[in-house]
Amino acid sequence: MSTLGSAQNPLCVAIVGSGPSGFYSTEALIRSELTVKVDMFERLPSPYGLVRSGVAPDHQKLKQAIQVYAKIAEQPEFNFIGNVTVGRDISVAELCTTHHAVILTYGAETNRRLGISGDDLPGSHTATEFVGWYNGHPDYRDRIFDLSHETAVIIGQGNVAADVSRILAKNVDELKHTDIAEHALAVLAESNIKNIYIIGRRGPAQAKFASKEIKEFGELEICDPIVDPDELLLNPASENELRDKSNSGSKKNYDILSKYSSLPTSNKQRQCHFTFLKSPIKIIGDGRVEKIILEKNKLTGDPMRQSARGTGRTIELETGIVFSSIGYRGLSMPGVPFNDDWGVLANSDGRIVDADNKPLPQLYCAGWIKRGPTGIIGTNRADSVATVAALLEDVKNMDADEHKNGAEGAYLILDNKGIRHISFSDWKKIDQKELERGLPNAKPREKFTYIKEMLELLD
Ligand code: NAP
Image 1: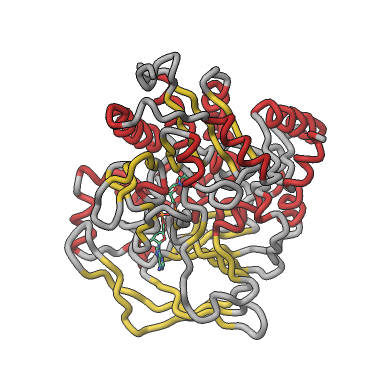
Image 2 (image 1 turned 45 degrees about the vertical axis):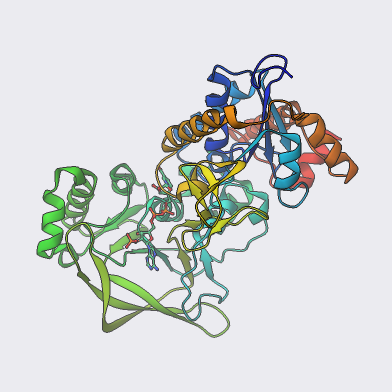
């Protein structure tokens, strides 16, 4: 047979997951010197992963990445197979029979749990659920968030915690012309929340917010940021950290927090309290969340590697709702080695490896399921390019004579199992309808929040 990657014998690659890493991997494959055919599998009928259902609705600019992905999707080498869950509807092993290589780019879908007593009480939620709910993700459509209490607590000080807090802090007029889901807007309109506590286990010098995100809290219509100046006192190691030139983001955060600590008394409807050096140890309530017990911490260790250690002193905070926003975690995929400690697929620079760290043929990964949930959207580009470079390097070792029928083979497997799959032009119909549904309320779109609704539209 002719060379693999030629027009007569294109390299067939299956990509699992349609978020940023899936599209950046596709782009890198299409830009390579080889002739490729890319089939992207997505469990929802809608593409774009966390750009559609993770990025906060009031950050529409970040969603412009979708325009880049839509352009990639127009390329003749690209094919979308939506509404198909790899690992359930079709296995990775089956994809290895239809494609020369499989790149797993399905992200880190779940939230890490606090694992403390009371974590499972009604009113205790993960940030992932709330973010999915206000963004109209079908998995979280029917979650219930009770915002009747005056105090909400968010554990964690990363950008997701900032998103969750900001959505709670904003007035509905600030949100109603975004693509926030209608059901979420209705609940937020009735919110009684007045106090939002964003709680960090380490100090103000270690908060993981991007400074742009924390700055937004000074610009909200009905909410002021509150910082107790005593909480900004630094130990010598933290002072050292803030002097480090490579740590300018943390220095910026600290300066913004210092500015907040000297603001005049707030007379706005809501207050967002940034508080540090406290870890949740227990959530208490009779049938639902009523209180959270926090232990005060001190920092130990060298600069840039300080960790929080409990002091035994506790405080309690009355609250009706707790969100843990302590990072995402990847889920395993049947038949693919998984590193349970890290919550990522076992891999060496994007090549899936066995227990002896030996690369397994045909299998690759990129994005959060490769390196963990870190970085911004753009970080996934270089990451995906690196994985595709490894794959292309391995093409010389692949069997050019082994026939792979790509999408055709995958459709056969799915059709035999009676699995309904949708194409990119099907998605474009759903997309168009969402855009139209947004018009009456001057929203960029009104998303469909049930898979059934999307499929019915196509029927
Ligand atoms: P993150 O940045 O890793 O922040 C997690 C936070 O949880 C940290 O403050 C961490 O504290 C804390 N934490 C972890 N375990 C804890 C525990 N057991 N108890 C108390 N606190 C704990 O994660 P993320 O906010 O989920 O964000 C994930 C990624 O998405 C990040 O790369 C983020 O930048 C990105 N993102 C970007 C944007 C944007 O660009 N606008 C928006 C959303 C998300 P320690 O520091 O002490 O570990």
